[in-house]
Structure formats: C-alpha cells, structure tokens
Image (tube, rainbow, N blue to C red; front, side):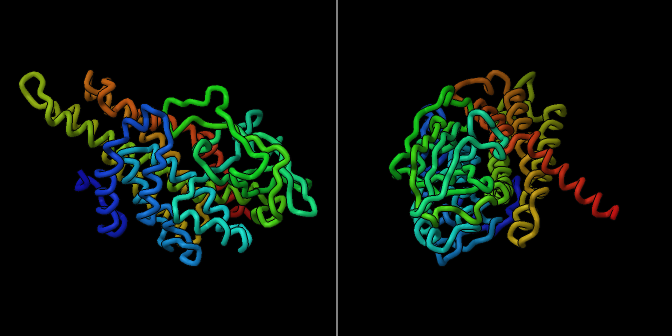
Length: 382
C-alpha cells in the first residue's frame, strides 16, 4: 500500500527495500517474535544488499550513502519486522561510534567486518544505574599492554548474537568507551533475570561479564574520559533511525487495519464507510505524514553535519508514541479480529510500546529537547 506514503529517497531504493521485505522478512516475522530469536539469517542477507554498512565510508567497505537512505531501508524493513530493525540499529550504533571516534588501526580491524554482516551491540546499561550512564560500576585501568576491564553490563539488546561490543567503563579520568570482541578471554554472557521482553523480541537480553579482560591500547575509542559525550552523539545519530523503526510499525498497523475494515461489513455497509471510522484513519494518516517529515528532516540535518540532538530526540519521541497510538487504534477498529493471535496487530502493539521505553525513553527524550530549549533561550538573553 505504498501509494499512501511519499518516498523521501530514490524510488528505486525504496522499491528494492519493499520487495526484499515482502520476499524475505514478512514470511518469518511472526516466527521470529514467537521464538524470541535473533534474525541472523536476515542480518546476513541485509549485509549482502549493502545495508548493514550503508553509511560507512567506502574506505572501510561501506556504501558511503546518506542517512536518509538508511532511514528509508529501516522503515521499510520494520513494516514487516521491528525485530530486524532493532537488530540492525544496534549494529549501526557500535559501527558509528568506532567510525566517528576510533583510531585508524581500530577502524581497519573492525569496520570492514560490518559490511560482511558482523553482529554487534552497545553495552551501556548496568543493573544498578539503568539510563544513568554517568554512574558506572564497570572499571577499566591502563596497563603496559593496553587496558584491563572488569564489571558487568545488563539487559544488552542483541547481546546473545553480538560478536563485538562497544562498552562504557569508568577510568581514572572519567567515563570512557572501549571496543571488546566477544571471543576475548574473560568475556562471557548469560541471560539475566527477567531477560525476556514482551516486544522487540530479537533474543533474550543478556548480561555481559568482563573479568580481567585485556584489550589493546587502540581499543579505547576516542579520548579517555570523553566516553559519555561520544555515546550521546552516537545515540543522537541512532535515534533518527529509531524513529524510522517506529514509523514502520505505525504504517504496518495502519495499513493492515485499513485493509481489514474496507473488507469487513457491518449493519449492511462496509466498516470503512462509517464516518467515525474514517476520522480515525484521517487523523492517524496526518500524524504519520507529519512525523515522517520530521524524521527525514532530522536525517537530512545529520547528513549536513548539523546539531541533531533536538531534532532526533523529537522524532524518536513522536514516532514511538504515535506507533503505540496507531497500533492500539488498529486493534480497536478491527474488533475481535484485531485481538487474535493469528493476526499481527498484537505484535505491532507490543513492539510499539516496547520502543517507547527502549532506545531512549520518552522522559529522557523530553529532557534532551528541553535542554536544547533552555540553552537556546539563555543564549538569546545574553
């Protein structure tokens, strides 16, 4: 039902992503959710298409394409499976951090592997601190050979399949960022307590254990003590893509419900011919259109090198909330049909709500937007 939505990128790319989604992703989407497993086969297929390293510099095996194009691909893939979308965004986060801040030797070691389908993840969270990544129990200290890390990260998305982690740890001068390969001696993982989630089920979340883990000096990403800033920039980059995933969920729920009510009859007429039902869809369509415009504008800002802290947070905030609203409305207008386990509407609703919390909660995003407003008004007052 693509004629409902405007393509914000080259039509050929959008068509390729839709055809790939229809052929490879849609047939397995329900099974991925039901089995709670990482879509490794699909991640390898998307790598073959060049999408896993789409924005990466060609010097490191990437496509050198703009962020708007990666956003479009993730939106289309997530129309069928937000599980695949969330798996690719964790790959992007670790890749982006290394690309922006890593030494050249580190880039040469890992970045070409992303183009080949390397599964990777961001290991930020700890049980005791949650979203407060300024407070860390994971420690790193310098040695003659490099760095030694000790600690435990919790609730790591894509952690069960990841072969490379970007890890935040406390050093003597502050929070710092490290690249840690899964096969490094001293690295282990296990399913944490309550590891399963009701949405975005790409495998149980894991706890990552680091016990006297030695990494080379160049595995410090960027400048020691600047890890918090580096991670915040990386997250701002990825939140634009996260908004695309939520938009994919919203579109899937909208289109599925619209098709159903156009086929369903009640009281001698098609359900879609009732004005009250039409108003539901008219309002939601306007909100999807507006949120897509905001999200693609944030991606263009990123491509242009502008500060995107506000625009990416606004896009993620609105898209995640809208996806939940659309999915809930879809269940409502479809009636009993919308509640059936054989239909995808329950999955849309669970994934949408889970992404209101994951990848930057609404409260954290509002804080980011508010901070930019306070900064702007106080600059004007000087």
